[in-house]
Length: 233
Image 1 (cartoon, rainbow, N blue to C red):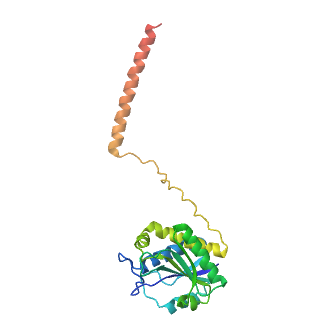
Image 2 (image 1 turned 135 degrees about the vertical axis):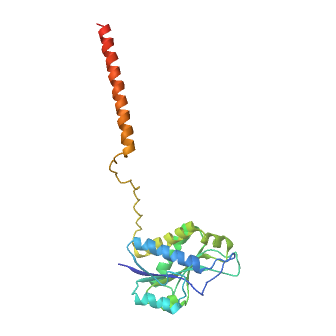
Image 3 (image 1 turned 135 degrees about the horizontal axis):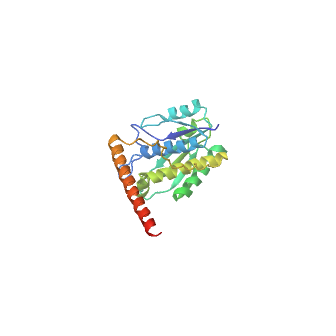
């Protein structure tokens, strides 16, 4: 089974970048990391997280979690920021050119860009601690620019979070050569069959009265039919 560690960037006292309307980067980072992990777990990937709550973890601790887990791969989830609020798009990072880290970064980049329609800023290379200190192929994903008001607004939308999470998951599966399996449609729940219930005492009396009245009406009808039959002979 493929073992993957997903890292939600920042957390706790480290808010990460802050958007134009005050959205802290750590919030969508965690949402996307957890949802992406859920999707990949459903596809048979063994997923571990560096954090599952709003908690501060050092960069070295993040790398150690992946190394101690003996993970096969590592993905760090981030959102970008720049002084020019018009900056936009998606980019991914690998520690160096060549190797599985770059290949994974490119597969995830292409999947995300295709899904959310952002500008493709390419695969880049950086001496980030979580890329340098991890012992397995690793990539860092910058989904979009939280400093861009339009992209910040998208990060607040649960539908966008779902789309991005699925795109990252599909990109990773493509990288490892595994097809994404659509979830089986859930069948609508059917109500449990119920045993017929005996009527309440008051209802039984009412039913008996109605039955007797109907029986008497039938008897009178039968008498009239007999009389009519005699007249027609």
